[in-house]
Image (cartoon, rainbow, N blue to C red):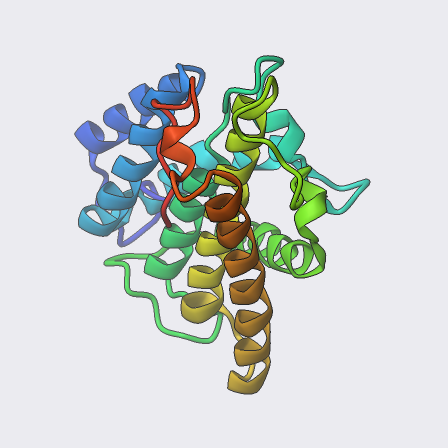
Length: 229
């Protein structure tokens, strides 16, 4: 982490907390959802810990990225029963929030009080940028969803999980595009338009196929609430 560099005062208590949080990375999904949300707040209130937070988050994110296929392995984020095992949208959002607090785009001034290791930010931005390019090329069918998807059938839990991950990923990457990219406004606008349209397509599909009940009405999915950015 960056706590030992000149000009950045160490925060032993904060670093101990981050150490404990790293051990939480292997806990059940509900705990990791709260962890990722909490780390966004910690990064904002304790900027000196951004290095440590990114260092704790990146291994999880890198495990989800498939270099060979140049995409997130969404299938690795659910188990054999169809339940979400890695809340990847919340993980992505936590990393994106750290990038934003560290300066957002590479040309902008850091909002963090103290230096943030540029290599960590660069690695984070690289994965986030790859995720944006991947999501731009994704079709609804890439998430195993289509107009015939039955959210109440035998595979309803799996389809519900895939839809929640798809919705969350589109929302988070929209937020990242708007806040943290170096692209010119016209390019950002075009990419936002594409992703927003895909997001609306997925949410409309869910609305129609659940007859307006939404994913919360799918049997067995009460614990997996919609993932928001």
